[in-house]
Image (cartoon, rainbow, N blue to C red; front, side):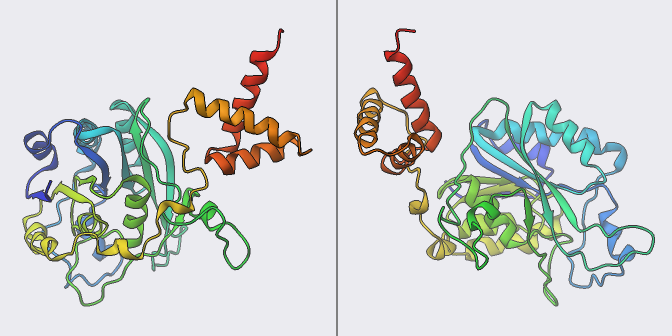
Length: 325
């Protein structure tokens, strides 16, 4: 496998270059159809370091455009794969309709909270984006819940760092690259790392239909993944594509945790009759010590690397099987 990128429209490009069901993860930040090429005038931004040639989609064509690119994204995605779509609120309805039209299912509607750095006089300041975390309907996707924090890790206030990280409101600051050449709108590295770590594994293929600054490709390579995608803006493509090969694949992995913090290390493995029998036998041995059912389930969960409720269900089934009623 190798990293491959194309300077072309994503719909035609996907049809021509990506086979069905080969992508593990899609991360994409499509145009918002809000005259993104003119935002610097609205917010008085200085754009001398921004790559020219940003290609916007008209509001009139946005729904059809969303339907068509998402159709290709679904086609190239594996059944175990998932997709993160970053959207503003203006055309969020079109994105949601495209998800439904293409038979995708929203797993989470994530809010990405950030500081926008502008003030308003007649309305509230917009300081968030929407991230639609989706999958093919009826499919089970990869998810690595312990890739960033262990189950027992606490912050200074004693709150679970894992629970906080798994909430669907993500507070991640935007990156301000003063004096550096950049694309019109870039997703921050920390946001991309979070998506990639939770939803893919080393060696997986990550696809971005709107590469822009190639941030998703850069972070994917840095985390030991492969990437592919499309960028229609020739200036942006030529500015970034040559930098990818200079990134050492997997260099970010050295500072990451292993999955050893997962107390349910067997949770995705198929049950065997032998294992279920061992659970039942161990349960009766534990109960002879005088502990409650709740305490017994917790001990079984720890010993067998399965969830608490899995233990409870196995024991309940064994009791029902022995009951004459």
